[in-house]
Amino acid sequence: MTAPLAVFFVLAGLAVIGAVSLILQKHPIHSALSLIVVMIALAGLYLLLGAEFVAAVQIIVYGGAIMVLFVFVIMLLNAGIEEHTSISKMAGAPGLLLVVALAGFVAATIAKSTESVQATPQSGEIASTIGISNMIFKDFVYPFELTSFLILVAVLGATVLAQREKS
Amino acid sequence: MVPTGYYIILSAILFGLGVFAFIFKRNIITIFMSIELMLNAVNLAFVAFSQALGKLDGQVFVLFVIVVAAAEAAVGLGIIILIARNRQTLNVERVNLLKL
Image (cartoon, rainbow over all chains, first blue to last red; front, side):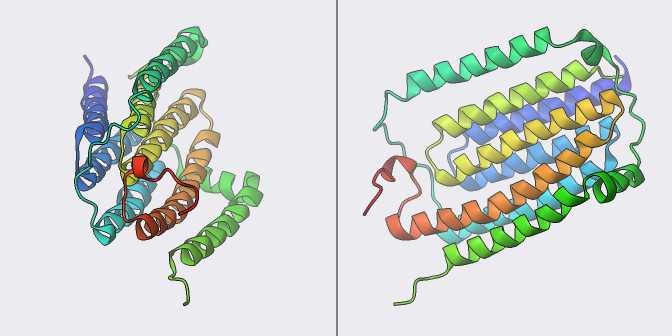
């Protein structure tokens, strides 16, 4: 087993364990910490793939900003241990069936997808950040400008939603 | 080096776990976190294909997905605060009325 393959399996195992832990934990703050483990592991996988800019953005934006927002809201709402209600027992069986069906569908799609792409070994060479910035500011400049508008609308919406109604 | 198929399989596993958490968790904040997990799984597939095909388009899409996820987190957490304030619960089973 080569070194990159070993690193891949360590990081992949970490990501899967984190995701399973997110499901098993009862307290939301523990789930949030598990999700941070998943995100750091994915950032390591991006580095392994050679996408160093995406890895940095993953840690700064996802692991930093978004998860701080989650933890902040958990603290703000004083969220406790998940209470167990079994109001909808019926949803359990079809839900499990749906998950298995989805996993089967994804597996079938992977199996059917062209062997050429799957077998292509990852070169692992560093993708240039210059290339990404060229694409964002030349080929994708209009979508990029639209995202700034999207963020503006999202911030306005969040502010309107969270403010207390005037009596 | 690592075959691209491994990354795609890992992405599918993470997405499946995200769907599972989305369906089975009861806390609305945890449900929201499982959506983030699914977005991350898709991002991994994007980057893996981008590197396999030698094109940077996939990585640019990942950046856009992260922007949308940040906007979604801001709005979604605002909605969660509103629900918690109006219903005094975070359990989605107890949020079953359109009108209080």
